[in-house]
Image 1 (cartoon, rainbow, N blue to C red):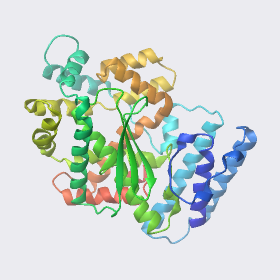
Image 2 (spheres, rainbow, N blue to C red; image 1 turned 45 degrees about the horizontal axis):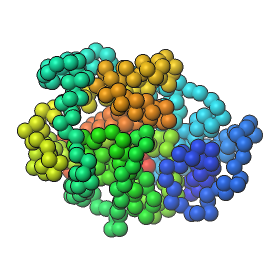
Image 3 (cartoon, rainbow, N blue to C red; image 1 turned 120 degrees about the vertical axis):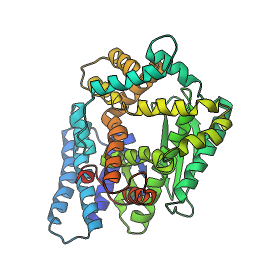
Image 4 (cartoon, one colour; image 1 turned 135 degrees about the vertical axis):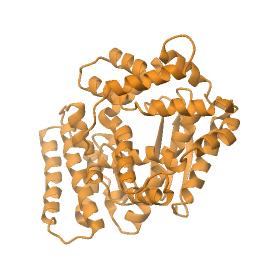
Length: 410
């Protein structure tokens, strides 16, 4: 399987010549990278060649299907198989094929996405309407309320340093990190995303925070957990240590963005926040440390958390906007209006979300469906909130072994 894995890496890197953002991270041998001068015109000959390479590797895997493998080797086999099927979909997209939102998510991410529940959303919005007093429609009242929790620009760095250190400390209570792991935070603008982890290998990440829009204090926790600990930085560091360095499984030295691994990565990263702040510990941390650091009114913490919890229950609304926009059912104006009305986004935030959808398309399902899939797997296997040890054990299993979205459903 090692030879198949090596050729898989080289194929991912070759596809990256035609979609540069496809290779999100690579820290394998330098001489495996294709020479940019070998880049060809995207035509039927190139597409046929790429498909032949993917089919050859899939056929090689089929030949191993009767091998008496260990449990971990079976997971590795399934991972490579699903990643290669996703590559076939990416080759089709490079050739100019267009898929519906649902079909693209299934092909690229090994996922069947749930549909938007209009009645459920109406119930949650009614609860928010009762909680948020004042004049104006619900969206206006929510955004006025939220404005009270914006981190003043001069304090952003100090707030992120505080939260990142806390997330790391809490993660270390349960998971051992490589000795030389580290990260660097940079503040950027003009990006379609809110934050990004660029993993460089050797347990090092560059974490970029987008400052185009105001950052609320809850986002400091969310982004620190998601991009850092126990999110992407931990995820990539453990895969590098346990699979690449310890086992020599080179397929994990490359990260193809539009592939099933992203659903696992985003789902575990989103689960990370409630993993490190169970019960009322998030409220206590906000009151005792985070709000004072940001210079905010601590008397509003409980109400703010309640509002955020309700909003989290309608997170699939953004998928509905993306689905209809990608499928051509709605134009940009209608999609933005929908996000403003049902996700309570400001028009500026809704526009940013549509920028993300235009560039990354069905990738949006990895955040909310990924979270649901990870949560269900952990809780159904005994990782309930009253058993922190088991919860962390299952989480570490997900972020340090070969996993696939459909595999979590078995």
